[in-house]
Image (tube, rainbow, N blue to C red; front, side):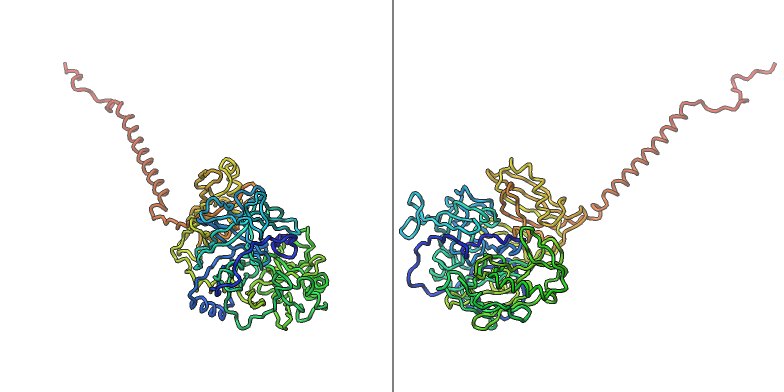
Length: 622
């Protein structure tokens, strides 16, 4: 179960805001094309939108940037995308957060940062890095040389560091040229920010340090972005920075930037199974109103609304057994007996409708408010919780699974369109950079983007997968744990530990380069393409997560080798050799028998009858 106490950078509980740096001119250039950033999890419903997207992308003369979103909302508690900073580019996995107004990564000089997915940012290795000099519009460091930032959260998490400027790249699938941008270089992390696997945060909120605002100020995109998250058990999706065509049946709600710095909507009613909850509509309009936050996993309602929602759902599922949640630290509301098929959940659980101030309605299926019970097969728990004593309604990523959400900041509205987000990404992919071809059986991270999961492999039986991995632990410290590491990798890849073996180990200063071999289950067996692709997908999506004592790793390269087909002679060589050996032994045995027999009889005198007389010994007659 994902941690529901994960920090929400830039969300309602922030105690201290980032100190902003004055930037940009009062007159913005004409907006450029949208920037497409794939979020990794995906799906199928978007035929009309896909066509308009292809027209919008194909007809424009401006480049687009596309990046994949990785991780799993419920497993990790967030989605990440890959950003590349510096020259040469240094790669980072950043949480996509619509509630944060700053993008930050761990700095090489940080002494209070945790072990994350990738190595820390090293300013000295980037030829294009420059610190943001101290000025009247920012808080300066102790030496009065460089601007600083700080974030603190009610969950007792925090991030602080200095501000720098460098080239930001969006991956090799991007057609948009790299852009200079200001970001935070962390010198300190605490709480969940310290322990999370992701490297840092990509801030999409309102603010001059937001990556959105910086790109808009440069005129390379229009003032809008969209997020599309995959459904239950799927993950990923697509992120679009910039404007894009809206489908005709997209529903909108007004979003008031004056009332709140967060992306809010005008929620008036919630219907469960077609019946409105008996709550005062003003309950959804307290404090900041109803806030959308992509950095939050679940949904949180004020007490009155939560109790009504819980009771309404529970009253509709009489056939299910109420059970304890997977985490004893939380009083989750869970039900057993619904089955594993997500598409059939609507037969058991009610649909939910959210009605906006303009009367338009967003319909939610059970996957938008449930998560799987991690310990009981076929059981599900409510992903909607009470927001403590806070009167704010907070809607996290679970609410918008398989939903395209457009944050139209220019027109002060937010749109929702139910679709299959993996299909949407596939459509976007077709209109842009080509998929890896049939010969793409090797991936590398030597360039600025991660080794991609293959969309297809040549049709052959796989005999070996080699994986080059760099771990930021010295070889002497890692050597005693190699067996443990192999077992961990096998477990995360869902294969037998005997299939994972170390092929080669090389010490590289403070890190260790390991080449792993992943073999078929048996010596005469082969891996199918589907099995091999599943293994590679888990590797490239960083499903393998190391304990703190083993540090963090970077996937450098993977390679798939076909199973070597043996000739008839090689397949029967043992039988042939055994037969030859038996013939030789039989021949030698026969030869020895003959030899012994001849030797035995060669030493005896010739046979003579008893009455035979030698001629010279006969007596002459008298």
